[in-house]
Length: 300
Image: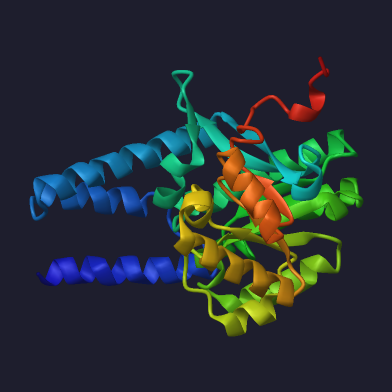
């Protein structure tokens, strides 16, 4: 019991240091998982989950070491002038070595609190900046965790990109999830203010899914609010989600923030959202993520 508490305390300390952007030993988490499994203290289900987590971490580390990462681009369309694209979101994808492309939802939550999460953010930013430099007419959003604020690799990658092409800042949007931003809101606010002076815009991702304090929402000055898909998908037949989404749109409008509806999958939902006054929409109804940059395709 004492050793379990000690391990928990050590993990809590590491999580705190990771949230502050401090380096955490990349092997620590794997070692802890191995000890937990071998000790026989956990249930079979817990052991299976720990093994899966260990395999995920190994696959991510291998993909990053082998430069097997890419971006998939999904259009975010202007609601009033669809299908005109307002910007694209660059979603990180990893190759597992067998040719299978792994979407972020399969690994990001496992890696987010470790140094691998910081390295994923660095690679996504590097790929996004490269796409912006190669395509001067494109505007692109890239995801990052607030835990990467102050991480040397991420900062150096951004500075190199801006030095090579200062115009990139005006076309770069950084998406930070609501849950991530609330880990250290004061530091996030300072970081955003500094980056916004260089032309970079910020989007609050998955708005409504977490526990945002409205005091912090006022202080953050996000340029864009992306309303979480749990409220959007099937909204035309869900009166409760309609009321909640109207409230979120009203809040964003009050703070002069641009609104994006995520997970728009049906024409009925798109029509209703347009009538509700949403600014932009994103989802498979308008286009799935594609590893081939959509702006390079020749119109038929």
